[in-house]
Image (cartoon, rainbow, N blue to C red; front, side):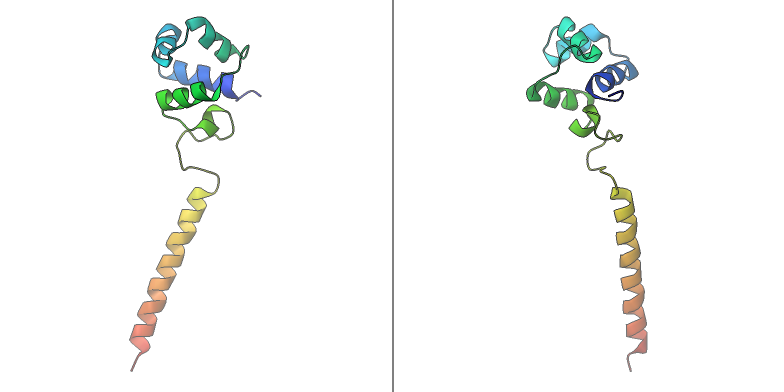
Length: 104
């Protein structure tokens, strides 16, 4: 998977300009193990995935390649659902105003 865990781990570190040695130390693992994770030679456990998500401030779905959005709560369709909710509220407000204006 081209945008899976190993790719995203390496890209997040590079994008932030963090040397591999420092990221490994911050994450509590050896540089060699981080290199293995980043090149896909090894797969991490859940504990490490959670630490990496916190370290890079991304969701597990993003880190694992299941989502393109790094932000939590940004699941597919969220923006459209918010837009629809806003439209429904506006319609309800207009309907209420129309009913108030029609009352004797």
